[in-house]
Image (tube, rainbow, N blue to C red; front, top):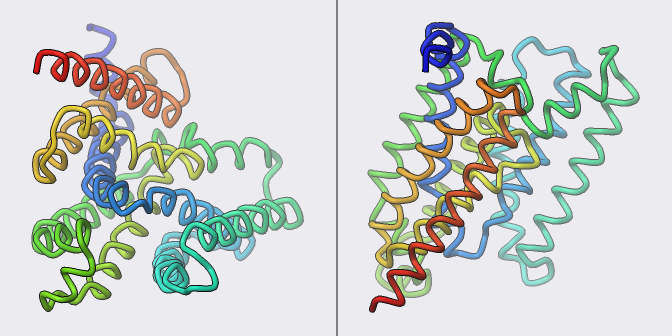
Length: 279
């Protein structure tokens, strides 16, 4: 505990905890919606797209790649949504096509135009988030706080509409809800979360951050509101525990958080089975 208290006094640890908790909270909010809409792998798709865009930003030697990564990832989220509604290219096929292409293109660019002497380390850090969250600056934490507030406020304001579109999009349209608009809002918010989460768990592990808390909460609760709240709480706890374990043991941050989420799911599954047996 003394060692932990000592670490908590260090600014970069404080920055990592603040950013990590906020990113985990945002990821969990839309996780339930994406799982229920069977669109869970949009996290994978957009994270691979963001990886490709980050490679382009590195080639262009942009000092702030967020200015390029964020808008282009949002654009790709909108394109994925539109393409997924195309009868010729289904949603899962569109995600697979764009994500694999962007990942391969990004890695190719990083190899051809490498400006670093440690290409493998840079790629590993981007894909698995091994050190980036521990080197996050005060300015980046501020951006993370602002974007997290926007995501949470947007989710609260459009909660009823998101609920309607999630469970029965056809009925929502018949009731006068602009389902296309709210699907677009979901896609944009998801893209913002993906870009934020790349600093925490890397581009290959983002889906776990979105899916695990939602699936864990579904083991315990049945209503949409209860599952969403439980998912947010579980995500916050797992992120906090994962970061602290990583700092104390020296393990990769992203992988440790995902492992903690997986352990949380196992516990919730056992508890859910026990509650079901009692009934």
